[in-house]
Amino acid sequence: MPKIKVGDAVIHYHEQGAGEPLLLITGFYGDLYNWKKATPMLASSYRVITFDNRGSGLTEAPSSEFTMAQMADDTAGLLDALGIERAHVLGWSMGGNVAQELVFRHPEKVADLVLMSTYTYEPNRARFAIDAMIHAVREGASMSTFQTMMQTWCSTESFFRGKVSVCELGEGCDISVLNGLARQKKALDAFDSRERLHLITMPTLVVHGDEDIMVPIAFGQKLAAGIANSEFEVIPGAGHFLPPSGYVPLVLDFLAKHPMEEMIGQESAESVGERD
Image (cartoon, rainbow, N blue to C red; front, top):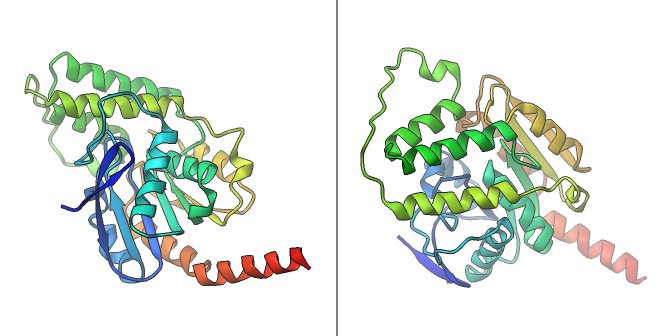
């Protein structure tokens, strides 16, 4: 359970594999264990770094409000603390917001970018739905119920086929957990990158499920359309939760086309050309 001090936070992180660094940023209410199925597949080719954002998991941070910009600074600080000057960066859902903000604030840290199930601004229906889920827990619903409600928004119709619906009400909830995700939600509500997408100039892959109701596919299409050097891939039959079997091959293929050594060489040559 390694942790490392970054600014006013103590970040919980894991590393696996060897090679060029690949940083995975999870979404709202997620933690590094969300990547447990994908990490072994990616770590066969890359040094994979996963971590808990402030407000979730085992990362420790002050109990005050924070912004997406602060979460991006945490991410840059983690790379610095691990001695990583630059990395491939993959963000899922809210993690894609953090990844975009990382590019805006620390572009030198990002070699290329993968944005999955994400957007330039939060869909209004999703904003209302998550607020209602948080309110339900404050009124006495359990975190198990919260997770069930999130699952219904993030998974597909086929996922629920044959399953029995069970929601447990009235269980206690660790208030620090609820407050942490509520602070993440406020940071998510305030994020808007529509006027800044032109600042993303590195190679970018945008991936979306065509059955995503939390963030409809149109949001992913608009995100890709606003990034000049981007590719857009659709995973058929996938919701907001993307199956590793669907996205990992796309990510590996994309990263293989953009090795960091080659990119650094191109930038050095361009720099020499500018001096001449």
